Length: 197
Image (cartoon, rainbow, N blue to C red; front, side, top):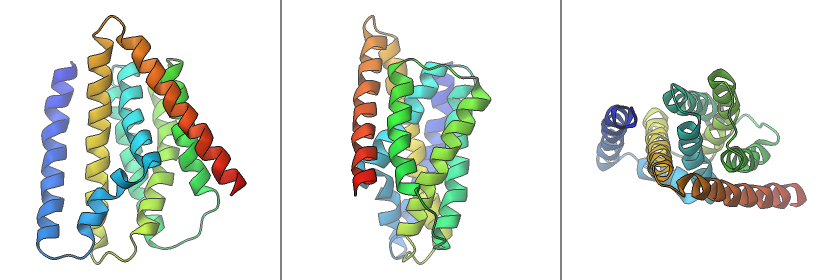
């Protein structure tokens, strides 16, 4: 099952990433920056890998529905961010995403797939909003959106694959929960630092 999911997701993500790189090579300003944007902040990176890892813990259709909900909400958030509409507490939402996703992994949190998808959808919107807001200088916004979404999808697949590899080993489930705990601790620090800023 895992191999079938990876076999479908990896080529699709690679295709999107190649399209983004090709668009950048054509001289569109800032597209490479958009492609790298999810990798340049530890909060974004950890949350996006955690989405994939948690979906692996949930199993079944959550493995595609949960990351898919994140990406769809991220698209909407990115469009709102590009419009420069000021929304309060989005930075806190991103920090909370790291805390709560890490906690879900640490405690092996199982939710019904629709509830899990809705929860990560809120987080996806926050992440997408910040990507869009910070990339308003990019000339071609549609391609920039495709770029940061492709990187996000690859991070989801990486988290999903890593969690499945861990869960196949005797101590893997424990290691995965410890990793979730570390992510949650980082998220708690992010929340505190942003509330006190």
